[in-house]
Image (cartoon, rainbow, N blue to C red; front, side, top):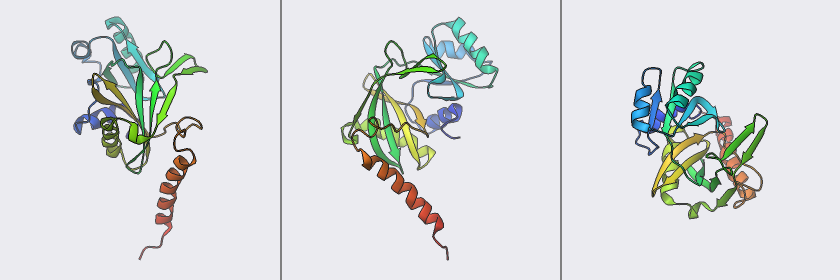
Length: 211
């Protein structure tokens, strides 16, 4: 619930001074604030959006009004965010409050997101470049850890944008991709061993008798 709800996540990150793109929780009465502060283009996110679905870029006031009207049919609040164009997003994998893996997720060709959904059943992905966590920018890793630790001690994939020398947390995903040949490219089986050992230890602790 905490990181799958974009409104909750936006307010949580702001409250704890985690760097994010400029963000406004939007309702029917503050459209002018979005226009004045964020300008165009900007990004709109449904509170329950995931895997790039329910996330759109709007380029002018007419698009903004139309998309908000569409989204307000399902929710009283929508997250509006500054658009930061980048070639890739950093994905920092975290387990039990420790960094696990680092990857660059490149934008899908000719698109502004890592996933381009041409049709409902047809998606195209940008390439992924995985590296040892030690080679990722320390500020990206620290930003990801700060954000994930606000959520809990589970398995997370934190998306971080690098723009003009600064790092901004975009999302904290509690169901991150772990695809064979991609996220496990560096650690291989050790990636899964580390994850399973954390959850096995927790299961054993719960089963242990209490006195």
